[in-house]
Image 1 (cartoon, rainbow, N blue to C red):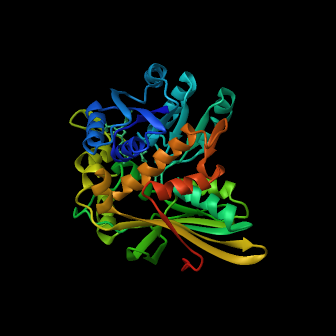
Image 2: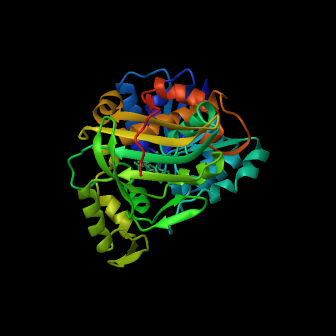
Image 3: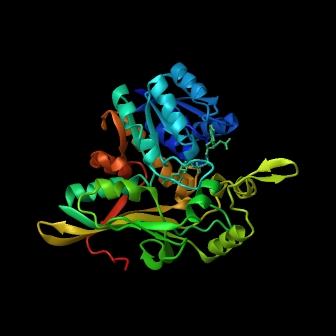
Length: 401
Ligand code: NDP
């Protein structure tokens, strides 16, 4: 019986909240707080409409950029943990508020400074000593990627390998929402991520031009898709935490229409993050673009098809070569029927709830700042199977060249 404060009320928060309500033995009380309180109320109403009434849910208005305001809310509500499902820009102010008011911290995306399209763990890793001396746990990256991909890696290491030499993380969204262009999570964060240079780790970082490396892969449940190498945050922590690693890469699928629209928007300056003056006031082109694009949560109900996200490992067990592929296939329409979301919010919201559950149940303990692969993967893997994200494994995968 414990209390969780969720910050943010977007697509991911909507799924995490309903999944908490479906696990009332852990989550007896939930406070959903965000910039726009009506969105918190809409999440609460959706949960009640679907009949999950055993968790006591309240809502609040909060500007999480303001550490004092956030700490005051934590102080009043006294949650066991704060689940940060706002934007990466709020990570540090929310971590500061948790330290100030004494709450554990969980998120799904690493800190990004608003004025620079750069995401790295270095800012959050500098909080290790502060969380340690406060006796608090910060769990970083409890979404799908990062998140489940780290848990998959810890599971592969624990059960199947002495050393993992190669990891390829493959993120495929085979969904079709019928719009010419829309992003499946926050458009601003998504476009910053995919328009940045790519990179992979091979004994050191190798940088590529955006979308320079393309491969084709035949995904179970989806079929053949073009995928492109991107930089992604879990590469940074897995390169450190997985023993024996020689190379780690991340690929994401994109359709031609998405890429053509993105190129055009880039070419006309709409993805820029430097402010411009428009009719006497400062605006950021990418934030304006976000305002005219479909809200990712609104893709629910009109997206058909499946996602397939997983990791392919190559390494050694007892001196012999070994391969392993573990992935989840998730159906957009089934997510909509179950909780009213699309599959990207679902595949992020379920692990966000599970990360919080691991901390609230004290299944995962420790003082400091941790990436998810540092904890025992088994209870989380079990939780995925029980909460809507079952996984499939293969010991004879097709490799990516
Ligand atoms: P949305 O844009 O749909 O939701 C973000 C929410 O945060 C909105 O409700 C927004 O409020 C709120 N918010 C923004 N700024 C503040 C603030 N200063 N104070 C309080 N609330 C604020 O995003 P998503 O739900 O799609 O994504 C949520 C997070 O999940 C992001 O950080 C994203 O990067 C991450 N993510 C992680 C993935 C993974 O696999 N690890 C995959 C997908 C997403 P308002 O409604 O007023 O705008």
